[in-house]
Structures are given as C-alpha cells and as structure tokens.
Image 1 (cartoon, one colour):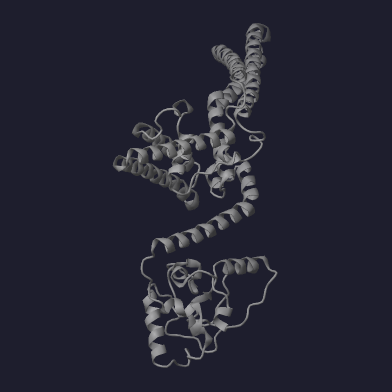
Image 2: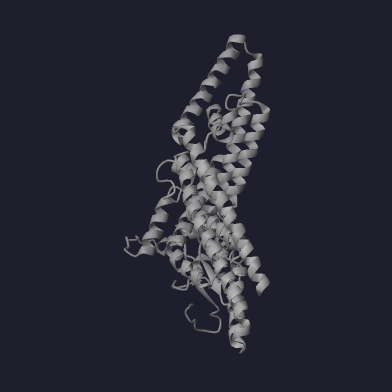
Length: 454
C-alpha cells in the first residue's frame, strides 16, 4: 500500500525499485543478510561487466519512476533530483514524462548553466547512473557480438525469475489446481522445463484416457441404474418387478466385471510398456524427469561444421538408410523434415513467453541448416579439385560419418541386446493388447445390455 501523502499537490509517490539509494547518495553499501537485498546485490555483481550500451537498454537499470493513483504508462520518467527525500527537490520535472528527451534536455540545460539550488553541480547524483541514463543518447544498433551478449544476459535473468517463480509458487498453485480453484492452463504458466513438459503430457494422456473410457457416461449410467432399481423396489409391486430387478442387477454385475477386467488389462499394458521402454533406454530412465536425449547425455550441436552435420544425421536418419548416400539431397530433405517436426512438437510443450526455450529450439534448426550448407559447399568445391584432393575430402567425410555412428551406438545402446529378446517382448505386448481389446468389446456389450434395460 502506498503511503498517504500530505498536501493538495501530493498526487504521486516516488519509487526506485531497481536503483539502490547509494547510487544517489554516494554512500558505501554494506552487505546485508536480508534475502531480497542479497539477491539484488548478487544480480548487480553479475552485471558489473555490462557495458554502457547494454546497460542503457536494460529495463531493470532504468532510473526511478513515479507511481500515480491513476494508470500511467510504465515508460514515464521524472527528474532524478525530484526525490522527495532531498532537501531541495526539483519541482519543474517531478511529474511523469513519457519522453526521455524531456528530462535529458532539462538536465543538460541546468548543467550548462552551472546548476541551481535544486541541481547543484557538486552533488554526487550527477555522477550516478540515474542521471547519466538520461544524459546518454540512444546508442546505435548493436553489432552481432553485443547483441548476443545482451540476449544471453536477458535470457539468464528471465530463466532465474521463472525458476524462482516455480520454486516459490508451485506447491500453492498445485493445491489450487487440485481444489478446482484454477484450471490446468493457469497452473501451467508457472512451470518451466521438464516439470512443464511432464504436466502437459500428463494432462494430454489423462484427457485421452477419460475419452476412451467414457468416464462421465459410465458415471451417469451407474446413477441411472441406481435410480431404476430404487424405482422398481419402491413402487409397491415387488413381486411383479422381481424379474426385472434380477435382470438389471445381473446386467449391472456383468458391466462392473467387464469394467474391472478392462482396468486390470490396462495395468498389465502399462507394465509391459515399461518393459519395452527399458529395452531401449539405459537403466533408471523412467524414474527420472528427463527426456530420452537428456538422460543419455546427448546435446544438439551448437557450432556449424561438417562433423556436426553427421551428428545430426545419426538422430534424424533411419538406421536402415545409414549405408545410403547420407549427403544426398533427398536424405537432407528428410532430415530437415524430421527436425522441423521435432522442434514443433517441443515448442508445443513450451509457453510462448518462454523465450529461452523457444530460441534454443530455433537455434537447433539454424545450426543444422548451416551444417547442410557447409557440407554442400564443400562437396561442390571438390569438382574443382584434383582427383587425389577430391578423394581425400570424401575419405575425411566417410571417417566423420563412421565416428558419428560409433558415438551414437555407444551412447544409446540400441543394439546391445539380441533381436530375439525384442521379438518376445513384442509378442507379449501384442497378446496383452489383443486380450485388452476383447475385454473392451465385452464392456461395450455390457453397457449396451444395461442401456436396453433402462
């Protein structure tokens, strides 16, 4: 709550959430045990190496603003010398201004005129970032190196904030979700990383299961059966209705038995699916919250090169085609299609405000396309080489491809067990799935029989 201000013109209260007071007073800031102050100090230390141009565009480094009782744009600024705690605060520019140059021209004019009582030139505030931000002209467009540095720091700050939000709010938001006070979409907003992925998957699978089992329709059917039996037993013609009651009870028992059988097979299918996953994954994969690639230590290449191209090829090309011409246009087109579908599916598990995750996925596509360009250009240059030079290049590429395949097989261990074990596992899964399908048909028949009696 904002403090009550005195006086007819006291419409605003001054806040400075991002700039420490020592920036204006020149005092030395001592270390604090308060968590928030410690966190701010750590964040400040991490950004000490930030150059002036990057600091200019850092929203958290902008000077103080004023908050009004009425909505005002967040881009409003006031003169740094208008702080109400000053002995003689500035009064000409103490109201929020939307344009930065209004404050800049105001400060430059006073500085060039030698200062005044409200803005004395010997005041240490002139040397602070709060003033220099206004005096600094808008920097020119960043070059690629500065843009990358600024983007990385912005993403790091964003990730820290989202991680902190998840840590502090997840438990309470989960309770609200279970109580029905909020929906899945609202709860999903505070999640990030693997927890978000897992929740989206659980929600999607739950919806599929509920749709397949017709949970709501079965619930209504049970209520209708109970109502019908109550009606038959209480209308005063128990002897006349005894046959109908017996038939309905028998149909109800058959429905419950078939439903229990379906649920039992679902449990067995779940166990069998675990066996199939364990067949391909290394030990402990299902017990983790990590993806298959993460669990096995696979990282997408981050530097475009010919060797990176072959790393991409191992996970984007069917093993059946490994002995084909891996650099052919058709194979590259296939790999691009596979990677695009993978990236799109991964994006569906992310929030649109998760700029870090979305950017990383887009970078995967960019790196692979650059790798394809490198390989294509190098192969085209072989046409101008001597026969020996061309053969040397092809031998080097073949070796890179062999190294990539060996690394893939050693990492994922897809060929460490005999095929006959997989065949037996598949036969067991097929038998259970067929029995489960029969049980579902019996359950559907039982539902139809009950419907006819209602």
